[in-house]
Image 1: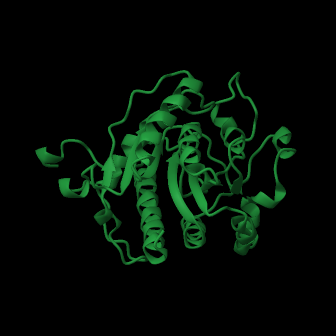
Image 2: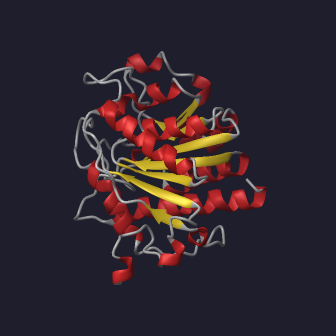
Length: 293
């Protein structure tokens, strides 16, 4: 990397393509891992994703596009408060400033609790927002380990502000089941049995959609580098097809990718996470171009 790109940016772009004043897409790294309850290390996820992204080809075959030409600016990772509620408030403030400038926000976790503040910022701008969660876990506990802002409570907090749809779920506590809306959940086994089962749930999303991807939505065979890997997950093409469907039918206004726990002995999952972000942006921005969103 040359001196002029000493600040490590997503995609290792030239300065003209990551100018913060003109970049359509803004990436916000959030190295936070306080409330996770099994394996720690998700705070190293954002940097691992950014480093892996330097090795991507920037032409996307399926969309026949180079989304980086819209500009992708990578913010320096902030120092986040340790207390979960304070971290949520900090993230909300930081994200709100970005979306106020009409930028497309991409949050890089960190543990999944960072999504609470990101969604709060988007709801402030889009009051009719709905959220699509791709995840192995329902994350609907009202409180866990003494905190309402634990990573296991993410969707409980988000659902207080806006409607949600959950796809890929295959792990939950019995207490969470009573709070599920069965019309808005597609379990992983249902996706495997009949992929079109996602259509009815996706149709319940509103016009403006926020996309949150916990990487454990993938089967551990594809994505072993997570804090809580669950067997029976989705594969690369299933996840991409879901995102494509949503991007074609709705206006995705922001997204995040969380819960990468990088393993120095196996960098492939880091690259997969980076590629997922770039592919998602390629699909989303192509549909915005087609639909003038």
